[in-house]
Image (cartoon, rainbow, N blue to C red; front, side):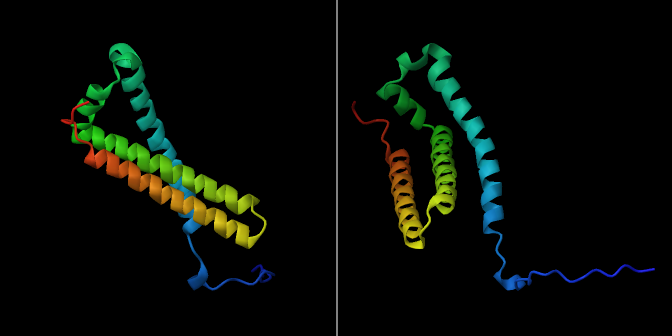
Amino acid sequence: MTIALDKPRSPRRPSARRSNWELASWLFMRLSGLALVILVLGHLLIMNILDGGVHRINWGFVAGRWSSPFWQFWDLSMLWLAELHGGNGLRTIINDYARKDQTRFWLKMLLYVSMVLILALGTFVIFTFDPNMDA
């Protein structure tokens, strides 16, 4: 005895047009959020709680910290993940709430340009910081 199922009423899209962009975006938000929790809590612990807290943070402290490639990578990872995570969240909000296509387009262009500028400036500062410069 076999059971016959009717064909679905909605037409199927060709597989060539399917994209996993939103799935990848969703997965990125979960993984980057988890990584950011670890990076940010470590940052807050080191900068604000251990060894005297915020009173010891000055030019010398930052210079000593950024003279190590480990801390440069830590801060760069935090910058990039936070920017991409937040930008992806704002992109989703723009897609949800902007009613007109033209408004959605320009809001996302403004978002993307600001993201690129902030990432470029932050990366430039981290990599070109001279710990031997006089305060």
